[in-house]
Image 1 (cartoon, rainbow, N blue to C red):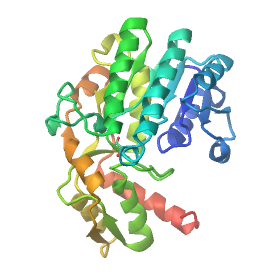
Image 2: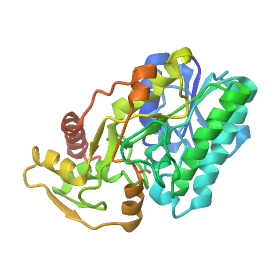
Image 3: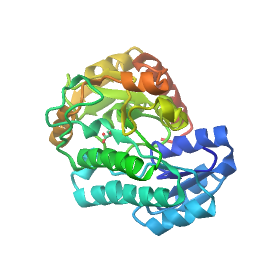
Length: 320
Ligand code: SER
């Protein structure tokens, strides 16, 4: 990987992936792009920025050729809960966008990383210690597009030799850019509300266990997989990866170790609750560990300390 394009750079993952990629590969070797570059200009004036609408193949092709890109990180997506309000938009961005990336990659021979998700599971998936290879019949447009994306990515690898690789991300917790419209977003919002108002209204029921991951582990997962020796990969699209599994009561208890009067209320959002119940409680990520050395560093305890510290700093500066 020497010349990298990130599509969807202003989003929750993209905004942090850009910094790490520029540190590792050099700022001029990493092109940040999004549907508009307004916010990116504030975040990243230290390297190339381009406007790319992922549903426009020409946009992608032009930038790939202009910078001689060899690896695309395609992060454009509509998350699970909001996808249920606009299924066609979720499909057009998730699958239309992916096909555009794969077609460009086929023409110029570049690698493609497109995250899959715990959302790809459902409809009979074993929910405890969910295997790498198992039943996947998701009930959301987000999940359907993630399974389709995995299959298409494997298809382009087998048929055309496009170097496609992916992970099934769990809920990603971070403090730079908020996620938008996901079922796992509560595990980010809870930290902001804990700092700013010492209480949180949770949309998921106690006992709803989901896999989660702190952003630094997610960034390492994406980059380490793209750097992995292809000879060792038995799977490609996509690897189970997880760092921790908890329910709302567990994260609240962890926050109370630092904010003893933190109060948790519940107002269940039926769409999110229904989605969460179809997703794994905890995944088996041994294939990722064996095939490319996946080894997460963060857990609920260490993540909570860091999240509260970072969000308190933002609050003190008047940024939230
Ligand atoms: N964080 C995503 C969502 O909740 C799951 O991949 O939609």
